[in-house]
Image (cartoon, rainbow, N blue to C red):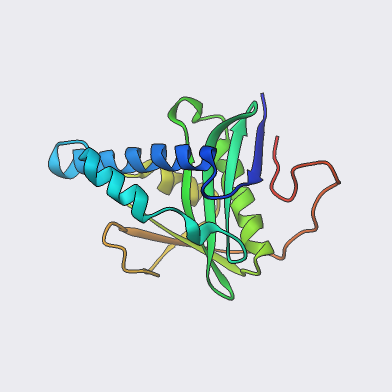
Length: 180
């Protein structure tokens, strides 16, 4: 059983399906916590349409899709905020495949993609109810910092300094962001 992580267009069918799964989960979690209900379907469709992921397209961003045994199973995106800073976003692994190191591989691949975009640091935001995400970022060396944005849903902000980009691996591999 292997993970493969590759860059993919933000509007590919796999990327769109993963975005829908991600957004549905985080939106439902918020509404269930704060209002005791799931996301209204019309609102879900409006938000998905409004946040396509176009900012994760080259040359200033990348969307990575993780496949487990060839099946789309997760995603992560990076986008440059400025010449030295990238933002990590949309880190997601399908619920049935969590606990198999997919998120660790995705974050590692996203960090490399950020370095290859020229970033020297990577930042992200998350919410208090996304306890698993906060634990993952802390375990991977991210430190909590002050806000880098004014997102109304953000409650925690993290940062990590990045090393220099490493050269791509051998030809034929899914480098620079392939993992197995």
